[in-house]
Image (cartoon, rainbow, N blue to C red; front, side, top):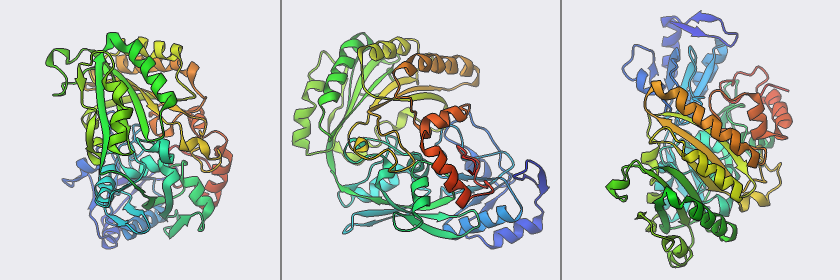
Amino acid sequence: MRATTLKGTEIELTPDMLAGLKMQLQGPLLTPDDPDYEASRRLWNAMIDRRPAVVVRCLGGADVMAGVRFAREHDLLLCIKGGGHNIAGLAVADGALMLDLSLMRGVWVDRERRVAHAQAGCELGDVDRETQVHGLATVLGFISTTGIAGLTLGGGFGYLTRRWGYTTDNVLGMEVVTPDGRLVHASADEHADLFWGLRGGGGNFGVVTRFDYRLYPLGPEIVGGLVAWPASEAPAVLELYRRLAEQAPPELTLVALLRPAPPAPWLPREYHGTPIVALLACYSGTPEEGEAVVAPIKGFGQPIGDVLVRRPYAQLQKLLDATQPKGRRYYWKSEYLPGIEPALCDTVIEHAGRIRSPHSAVILFQLGGALNALDNDHSAVGNRDARYVVNVGGAWESPEDDAANIAWAREAWLDLKAFSTGGTYINFLTEDEGPERVEAALGPALRRLAEIKRRWDPDNRFRVNRNIAPG
């Protein structure tokens, strides 16, 4: 079996070499002949189709350590898969040794200390399910099938960001396998430089096998969901969004979406496939307060659908899952925004009207609040001036439609860039984004990240990522 080295050459992985590695593992070792290989290498974004030489399906930190040491011994290209949800497909590389952490999905909740210990293969729903048993939650994203590792290492934001910051602002510690195969703990008190870099710098410095998250009392019931109107109401609805978002308490997070109506049971059949505008809200305080706060949304105009109600928080976390299924083709462009202004809304409406696929959307996420209160160098994620994110989300089914949908996303982004803070969210960068976009995402942190890279990974063994060269 041929495998790719860090130098780009190929070496033969003999049966004896693979047998030696297999003896060190608790989890399975997969080659292209194994029936589970295809499922392991397949990612959320169907545009990514790469084939690693061999896959280590890790069951714990010891398996990760064995895989990293084997890759180091043979100078192999190494890639790491958590949830496999990254739009650029950073989890997999042709000819590489892939560490698949997706079987590592344990979550342990310390209710007294309000800390969740989560293995790196967890999806967001795994963490929500276990923490909500205790009426607790941490800041995670919007799609429950997203992997926690990529989300957290790139920053992470969701319904609770306005109250408690980026996901990575709520990480207390991480268990990390270093490039030489050691297991270390990174926190504010241990290996603080590594801890700083991992909170926004991605997988450049090691393989995180466990995250320790700070938890907050929440739920189990909140007020959350969507209200939708025909796209003809978009100017008025976006003005409502702008006005409500500017005065919203931190417990309220608002998201505006413009897209063709999905075939959802809460929308009338005659509207399916037609352009709509919707507001997604989450009020994470008491339900009684929440019902009063969201009343202006529910009472606005003549909605065609309304599922903005009291519901379990964990249910809200799954509400959008059907819009982001595994196996669809995805291409995104995004920017951080300092605010919402009328010209931005006009531009969003214009390009939403040109959507080429029934699955695509233009989305405005509200962020402003807790993240703005921290210094920009609090962690590598930076972008503490962001109040919103705009995401031009292309999604479609057929490869024949790639060119048209990618062109739509790029054209919309070029017009929306005029409203940007100059920063962008690193987890939304697609495969074709170059170093200038990484600089837009990480900005002033890049120099310090390069120094941390030099200390922890001078040979750049962890390079299948948004790579930061050793400085």
